[in-house]
Image 1 (cartoon, one colour):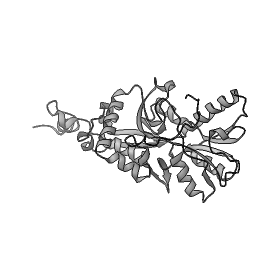
Image 2 (tube, one colour):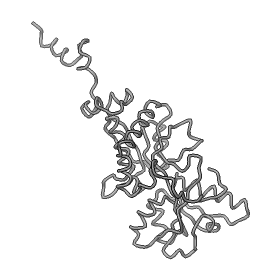
Image 3 (cartoon, one colour):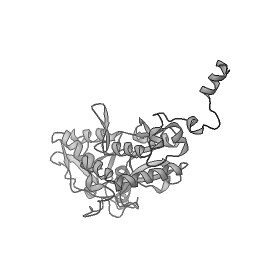
Image 4 (cartoon, rainbow, N blue to C red):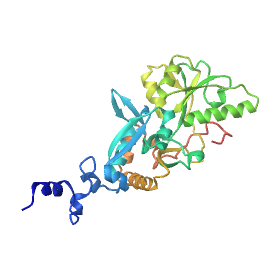
Length: 301
């Protein structure tokens, strides 16, 4: 007769020949990881959870609306985790704190518009997610007649902190000052929302962001802001693609996410997500026809 104490040990523990019954179950019950389209690395399979982080300030890509997290990149991040069968723990950081959150292992992947930067390639893997087109935005009526980067010398121009737009305007400023032109008063704002509010209030002569965010905030500003001119591109070595970031120490997670992205592109889910949010023209599969001119000719980022 087996004592109650021994029975309790057998039930609570693992018997050596029943390995499948003793495998640690993921947080969401285990079935999703077991049936994942792409098998996640062991640490993630063990917990069933992945920590995704974003600033949530870049509509219509990833942002908050009426207390809900929404947007094309939010849905894409969710779909990628779903391919790995993982439950998501979403965390919000200021744009300037995202990279430190990743390096400090508080985030497993950053979901936002990140360009491929040579100076951080030893720290992160870069997973391309889409393309980005840059837009110069001005107050209604364009009182300072700013239509492009060429019109910015001597003007007050806003940029979102930690973005490709910021890098471009700062680099352009250095170039024109070296050429003897008036310096741009570059104003760095914590996020895109605050920046466009400052444009609408005419506290800025112009601002630079993505064409998608400009269209979104332009609709909300009731005519307070408008496009200064046609969209343009950065001309970076990554051909204006933007993507998500993963720690360099996690090559297996990066490989798994690459496979997951390929799956979503091949089955049409990826394109559907971007088209739903009006971003079908900047997907990895369709961008390229009629590509806009360079924002800052002669500048290399």
